[in-house]
Image (cartoon, rainbow, N blue to C red; front, side, top):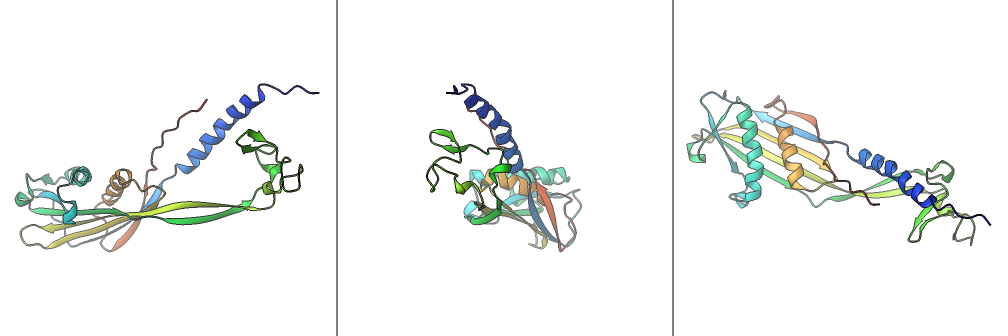
Length: 228
């Protein structure tokens, strides 16, 4: 009788590490933001001041809104506009809003899984560890047909997020700029989505009026924890 190799289980564990990391790297891809902008003639920054206010009164005064407003303020200052001490003292009002929906399921069917081309051919995951596909199929102790001949179907929740930004002349209420940045992603974390959408909004700002452009947004950083 052949004695089992005691190092085999550890070999499988170590071999799985690069595969897991490769899978994570494949998931960490940018998502695309569609940015639509409309403008009349934005005034030059010299002599102009601005204040960021909530377009939705329900968000006004909130700490979360203040955090995202800071990102808009940084971008406006980068363009050369001065931040006013208060909305009443500003010559321009930047009205800002953000949202993310509840998501929807996206079903994807991939090709057939062939055990002869599968890097884990010979072993499937069970609560007892790794077992052979020839073990415990509906044919008895024969070939496990769930490993062969069928398509892989995966389900992913996809969320649509967006920000709206408007710039008005404070004294007259004249609308000078309107813009919306929208993206689909597998994340619904506003703390990740909103700053990136703000960055997309201000990429090549103010853009061409009436044009929609697609801008890549950086993938969300994920912490990988090693399990020994």
